[in-house]
Amino acid sequence: MTERTPPIIIKKIRKKRHSEAHGGSWKVAYADFVTAMMAFFLLLWLLSMVPKEKQAAVSEYFKKFTIFEQSSAGGGRSFMNSSTHVFDNQVTGQQKREKDAARESIDMEEMAKKLKIAVDDKLQSLSNQVLVDAIDEGVRIQIVDNDGSLMFQLGRAEPTDRAKAIIRLVSENIRGKTNKIAIEGHTDSAPFRGAQTTNWELSTSRASAARRELEKNGVAPDQIAKVVGYADQALLIKDDPHDPRNRRISIILLKAGI
Image 1 (cartoon, rainbow, N blue to C red):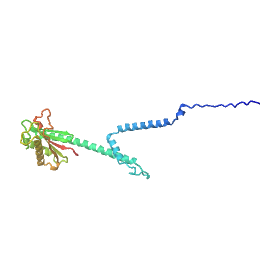
Image 2 (image 1 turned 90 degrees about the vertical axis):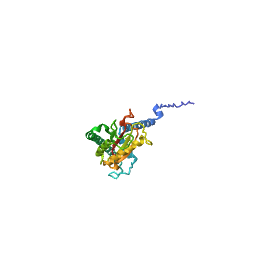
Image 3 (image 1 turned 60 degrees about the vertical axis):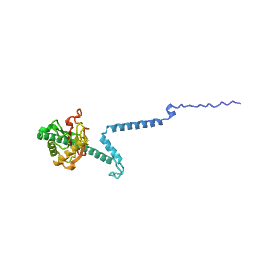
Image 4 (image 1 turned 90 degrees about the horizontal axis):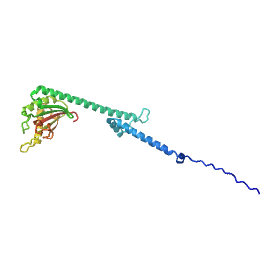
């Protein structure tokens, strides 16, 4: 009996590569993640470069945004033109306000110069007792005491003839304007020895007396926005609380909107 030869079986073993063993989908996901992060940080960088007023305009637009606000010419919905229009209006309005504020600051500086010239020309002997300057709030005119030349008698609220002459000149230059007026009274730090009166009452009474003089000289009552006394809490000469120049009246022609 013939012995049969067993068949020869050849088995091919194919080794898998490392990348095939784990798959390649994670690489796609990682690439998407990196791209998204790059876009996010690019957006943050771009926002940091945009002026604050434009950021405010964009923010305001998206608060009120709706895709149903406006239609495109072909009948479809369009919000790009709407957003651009709102954004431009916001920027234009901000630029206009900035220009108006700059123009008003220039006007206030011109008013301060005009007042200084008027004081030097018409009140030569008292010009060192009238301080005029442009401040953030507007134009400030300070009427101060000097040794031997008082604007108010010590302890009294009635202005002297010198003070009345200065207030008359100030009135001529500010009456008829649309700007509001603030009046402040100040004292030095010397304690007031009145029976039931302190520097608070005295400074307030002097500010009110100055208001009456302004109105007597043609300033409209509704132009007065504020009358207040500060006692010795806002000294002009801080190094010397008893300096007579701390006793003063401030008349401030306020900027619009203040």
